[in-house]
Image (tube, rainbow, N blue to C red; front, side, top):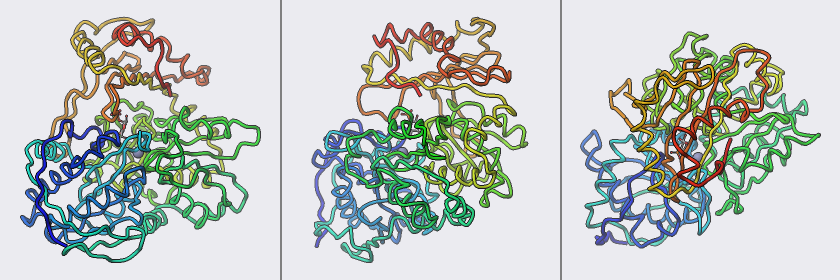
Length: 550
Ligand code: G1P
Ligand code: ZN
């Protein structure tokens, strides 16, 4: 084995988006494409480690969601790591680690950081997407300063350092060596499961299953399957078959592993059937997202966060209460009302889990959530699908109440934030950019406009000042806020790989008991029409309706 120096070149488009670098598999498979990005990352880490030692003596964690190209990418990254001074890599067996598990492993082993191979909920397979992101020593996504530095480095890099060692056996637990670097192949589930046992009352959950409580968890042929089987079926005694589509497949069985009512349609059908299980849930490609559903009763992610906040003290890990909560700006304000009632802080951040990291690290927030089916807590620095499922199971075990009863009681007490997200996918990039540009330009004229009984009191482009490090992130989405709290929000997706995706978020609050049970789209129809009127969505995109409305 020897370390080679190999010439490389700049590639277009290696700037990470909302969550790492995501591209089509075919883009990642271009010679040197992945190598260039990883070498840039290692160069930045080597230049920036606080102790001046760079990656020397450091441990990195490595694993991914098992999608197509995961195994080959792991071998490539190991050879680059070995040539760039890394002392040890903790590699999930088979190259597998769910995103929350990777975060847990980084934290439990006090690793310097970790590389996660995932394109999350994007489809996989040779025609699908691949992705890579770096998480720092707190277990959370790298901040913007670091991702920007990596991007800048990708553009000027001229050589790679790479070992020419043979591939290692990534399916064999235990220690192997590449150059001077140790590769410790670890059980991907063990650390994560240990963490879940610390947070939740496993005895109570065993009791729930022993009493015949029926659950259907749809792992969507993604990485969450082995985690859910190990914890729910092996450790908590749920019947075999509780976790369906549990076998991870490189192309997710051709499905779109995004746990929402549209893509997890099969779960919705089961939960609407006459003999529906008591509780249903699904996770995404890398198992950080979750959707929870009662019989014939989906829970909106924003409501899920609000309910978790309201009932957190029922869970051993949160028995002493929450330090605070945080939600992304487009997420509904349902949790704000709970935080106010509890007398705890509620932070509003830009979209993307990385913005929660500082608040969690500083102990200012304990629970965080996004409308995009993401909830999590200070136990890791990622959102966590199975954690959310265990949380909801625990709530049902502790209260003896069903999902629907819990949610309706919540609305009766706090009121309901009707909420929906409309996605317009695969719009030509220039059309999407022009729409946002013109909308931004029109903001000064919008204030004061009247829609029925409400008046627009704020029209701006959301900017966030991080309360911990003072960094400012601007241009985070156009907000139109009415005097009754109703909101219309526009932003472009930062995770897509085809054209642009316009996300339109609609919300309105209702406290009148007589109006808590309207069909969601009907309750928001006037806001949707207003959004179309001010942004010209249909006219500009030629789309008469959103591709997905959840
Ligand atoms: C989407 C979601 C966002 C989430 C991200 C990563 O980003 O909207 O909440 O953090 O995926 O899972 P977007 O495509 O909107 O930039
Ligand atoms: Zn994900």
